[in-house]
Every structure is written in structure tokens, then in C-alpha cells.
Image (cartoon, rainbow, N blue to C red; front, side):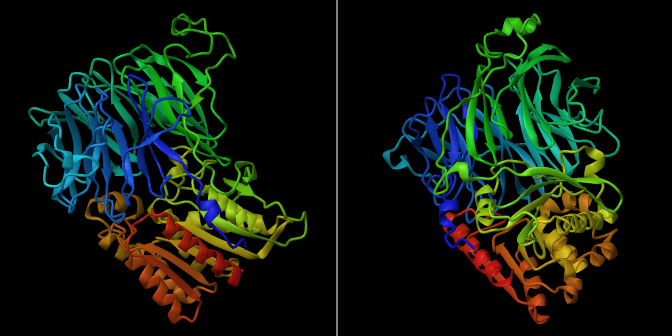
Length: 637
């Protein structure tokens, strides 16, 4: 194994852009080791750091007036975010909420920029409500400079009592209503329009079965909602929902691939969206030309994945985060008014005269450090498909290290299973430095998108629901058989590796198919479905039960698939990592599986961080955990 992991983990990323009408960009970057706020005024210029916490900043949102930035921050990665306001000019920070027992989820600025909306579980830990807060007052004392002021919270107004986990998606153009979303399950959402003055909520997405409504936003006059949805198709489309008639009309059909990102400026009708084509992003930008029609052209970006699409106040520019397996998270901007299609103008688009093949190129604004490993060293995976037990083809990304020797059968491999399960392994920068570390250490990487993954339509995503849960584990086993047939792979040196739900998949794989694995690495995984559902955050339980099965109706089944009851089958050494403050998968899951495996006489190593939660957010902790994982794999594989 390569011994020094720090050069890899020193790679930085810039994410979550927010832009103003006068051209300033705010974003988050982990240059200091945790995500903080920085401001940039020109492409690839020298940014100014504006927050200096040891804890990560979770989001950044510039006000429509450009004179304030809202952001969120938790403590010890416990996800109990509090809200703050930052003066971008002098760095003054005002703490807006001070309820560490409650989670505050950002909603957005009012059109005038003098109010904010958010949701919080202040009233009941299991339920979130909608609050609106006036933010006109500005801190004026010298002591307020560069620090959060505690105890200055204005009383927010509770405008709507929710049930379960809800979020504010948008303000109406007139500032009188809020668009509120509720996720029943990973594949089932609802939208409500809430009157700010009366608190009256109107359900605007009645439907049967599971339907998703993502990235919702009000239309130009507030009479319709635009979002991405699979209401009319197996894949996600751009749709328009009439608030009065509740009709759902397709505006853009993504074909066999889903539209999974969407940004819209109601004042100008300008918009952008991205199609997820086998994991790769294709970005379109344009504008609304009628209530249910758009004129767009493709935007040229590096081959990879685009996320965080946002259009700035005034509708002039689109910002997005772009990354690839050899491009660390970078922010790109597109001039929507003047450079929508290269040399063509917006008028050309509306008249249908845009020249073919002349697409606008996104301009790179941030160039974060690649750390100690040049980007040219990073490998690009191959997209393959393999056949599973029911003749279905499973997509996967497969990467061989440089020293893999043809048909030698000597290359060990890490089977890296994504979490979710409604997620997708894509060719992005996510966790790419540590994957390159493993490649440079001689491991191949195999990253399957087993059934239940998003990105391949509603039917595919539902193939692992409740009683079909273990079919996705069978897909992993079929992938291992594919690997064993590969001439370069050592079939006796295969590692099972995954985080969160992927951690459950690791534990399920080594209990259901114990003879396939040389070692396993479980990050924040679920060992016992019963204790997980009993102890996860109150606000998450019903959402997770809709996906996995309920304690009341499916207890016997959940017990039957819980790895904790099959530890006597485990044959390979196990590494378990967890954060003590994890509100999603409680740390008890790690402790009980580690203790049970140790009782079987199987080598097990634990790595628990007292100051981390579901994610390892601090650089020094990340270095420690991967140094220990490297030593573990060197010993056992």
C-alpha cells in the first residue's frame, strides 16, 4: 500500500455557488480543512475568506439585494444546523437562531430580501414546521465583527405546522406564499402552497403511487409550479403544475434519461437543467417561451457531473458545480443574456435561428488545489454492464490500476457500494482522491449501481423495495462473479466497501455470501434494522420505513435480513467506522456489529470519532481513518 494518504486528501473542492446581480460569487470550500465561505469577484481571481470555523458550513445563500449572505452551521457534525447572516463587506456575522436542540433547514430569501423562510423541528423532534423571520436589523457594534453573536435571535413566526420532514422550496414572486415540499419516501414527494399571512396550505400534487417532484419553483406569476418529476413517465421530466387545476404538463421530455437538476428565474423566465445520461451530465440553458414550452441549447462543460445549478438575481447568469474523476469540484458560470448560444443572441433562440453546433461554453471561476497528486494522475473508469440473476444488466464503473498485468490474475479489487439506496455512483469527484489512493496502492475499483439506484427510472429504483431488499445484494454477488472472470483480477482478494446504506450492503454481503470476500470496510452502516429504525432521528423514521419496511408491519422480515443475526457466517476481517454524533445511523449500530464479530473470533477493528456524525468532516479525522484502513487492508488482503 501507498503509505502516505495526506497528499491525496489535501485536494480541495469548491461547491454550492450563490451569485448576485452585480457579479459576485459566494461559495463553500474546504481550503482550511472544513467547508467555509469565500467570496470571489472575477473568474479565477483571489477569493476572500469570510468564515473561520472549525465546524463545516452547510450552505451559502446570497440575498436578492446582495447585501447579506445566509449560511448554516452545526456542531460536531450533529446536523443540528443553526442559521446565520453574514455581511459580505466587513465580515460581520449575526446568529439568527440559537436552538441547538433543533434542526434548522434553509428555505430561502423573500423576493425583497428582508425576510427568510426555513423549517425546524422546534415544536416536536419528529415534525418540522415552517417559520418566517424578519432580518432587517443589522449588528452595529465592534464586538459583532467576525464572530457569531449569541442570544440575538429575533422571534421567528411559525406560519405552518408540518408533519414529518418538510422543507421550503421557494417564495412566490409577490412574497405572499411559500412552496413547501414533503418527502414521504426517497421516491415519493408532495408539494404544498402555503399562504404566509394565514398559514393555509393547499396540496397541489395529489397522486397515486410513488411520484417525485424535485427542484420545485414558482412560475413567473405564481400561478404554476415548475419542477422535475416522474408524474408522467418512468424517468424524470421537466413539468408544469397548474396551481388551480392541478394538471401536470410535460415541458421537456428527457427521453430515456432523467432530468435531475433544474434552476429557474421567474422574473426573466430563464432556466437551466441537466440530464443524467448514464451518470454523465448534459446541461441545457434557455428560457420559457410559453407556459409549457422551453427553448434551450446545450452548454459545453467538462465531461463529468454538474450539480448545484443556480441562476443569480436578475437572471443574467447561471452558476453550477462541475466535477469529474479527474476534475476536483469547480464552479463554472454561464452568461445567459449575451452568450446563450455562442455567437447567437437570446432573440435568435426565440426565433429558432440559433446556429447548429455553436453552443455556449461555461467559464471556469474557481480552480481549487488538487493537493499533492496532479489531476493527470487520476484514472477515468470504464462504464461496463454485467448480467445478474434475473438476466437484468447492472451498470458499473470499473477501473484498473496502472500496474495491472493483463491476464495475470494478481490484482486485488475493492467493490465500492454506494449509499442511499436512492443514489447513484457517477463519474464525479466525490471521494475520488481516496479511490485514487487505492488505485495507486494496486487495487482495482468496482462501483456497481445495483437495482434500487437512482438515475435509471422509477421502475429500476423500486426493484429493491421492502421484501425485494436482498435482490440488490444478489446483484453485488453477480458483480463479484464478473470480476472473478476478469483475467487481471485476483478472485481471492476482493474487498467489500460501503458507506451508510452501502455499509448495510457490506454487512449483508459478508453474511449472505461469506466466501466471496477477503476483507470488508463498513462506514456508518446498519447492522440491525430494528434498532436502526427505533433509534434513528424521529423526523426520519416514517420516511425510512416507507423505503425499508415498518416496525409495525414488517418487523419479522426486517429481523430476517438484519446482518446482526447472521454474524456467525462472517469469515473475513471487518473494519467499522462511525461518528458518535450520527443522527441518521446511530453509533450503536457500529458498536453492536463490532462486538458480535469479535465474539466470533473474527478480526475486527473500529474507528469511532467523538466529534463526527454521519460524515467525517474534519481533515485530520479523515487522514486518521484512511491511514488505519490502509494498514488494515495491507494486513488482511
